Image (cartoon, each protein chain N blue to C red):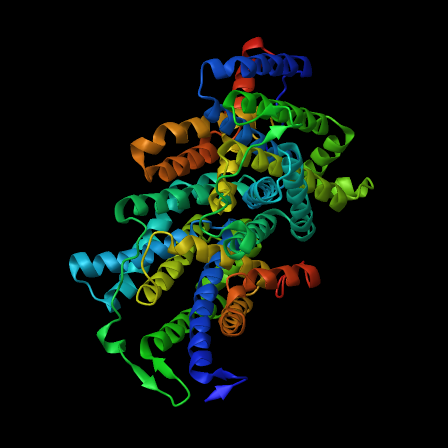
Length: 318
Length: 293
């Protein structure tokens, strides 16, 4: 697996602050809905990367968490009538709970089997969504009100919503950053690098993996619930295995195991899909597939990984 | 006639559909297991190869007037050759890396293949007529047996057991098993392992293509026919484990039958029953029924 880059914490922090300022100003330049979509998928990919990049676990079922949180949040907002912050919270908790179930089952196997188990579980959840009464089947949940935060700020205005989404993103990103650099995050990296040694050092590896899985699933749910709020509907598309593949692609393209990689990857993929959708139609899948193949064959460090390697070469660091 | 309050005709026909699906699960999981044994790659493009097999048969018939029996031979050869080329050009570059990269590469490949077929043929299904010699059916008293469907089960099982015989009882199979155990040693003994690997991948996907041709007259031929099937096959592989060939065949068939029975007794659950079995197996016997832990 690709290791995290050698850029120092101070520099990462500086880059993050610049990006945050850009985020504040961005709606003046770019259509806010597109920006919010990028933020949601960026968060989704960052949550996924916590598992793949740092714990070395390839889940092929993360779309289930994105989809479930969207349905739960949509149901709470439209049919129960709760406030958006509570809706997002329930969606996130539901996804984390599903993550616990998936995690309990999937960590019984490793490597390639882990990926197949998560994919199969996510497909089961997809079929349940297809038939369950509360998901609206093929139509999904439509016309969901965005509501007002704390009864004060109306989210029906796209700009208000944008800053709300940005705040959620920054919070979640900070949480992920803290997790990666905490003792817990270091144990995860140790498990990725050498599981038998981590076990022999006395770490309860299964518990660490499960916790990482639940955290990743919960944050994916946060992304799904927020995304639902942006588009005002929840459909089966979010839970489809294509979505699980897409988040893998975003993470690898951006650079797995890097802090910023997933966000870069999701920006590229979402923008690309947005630009190409009208022009090439069904060939979008082909282009995604080609990017996948090229990344795996020749570009395994991803954009952020390559850039930081280039930077290191330029300043002549060892 | 009725059995457990269910008309035997319904029970029989669903059991037959279950056996058909089960024999497809068996062929596909067998191919996955053979490829995994030697290449250490889970071939995510397996469903796409199955779909290509069905399409090659359909194109051969509609464009060139080549009949079903020739398609049954040609489609596996064409798709197998395509697979061998894929192995030579793409997969070969990944053997020194983590196994997960093979999964990711073949996933990308599946997207490309599926997307190209979708662009060309849309997602609506093309129908492939049942060949003349196998048309019609036989009334058995308790049910009506469509001859083609019975043929699918027989042909699929014959191919499965033929594969088992080749691997367990022939010299080529011995090389293959030795290569799975220790490729360096086999290479040192003078056997060309890279060629063996190319052959294995080509053979594995040819099996998938063969299943695709068998499936063409039963199901609609469409670009996404492989991907949903493949995910179920993954669950089958997790249930059975990839250690044993006969185990793969048995697991595939058994799950097909379980799925067919679920369609009779609890139709709502039929699309998820295989996954439920997977969950139970993971809880009770995490290594899989025939797996070595």
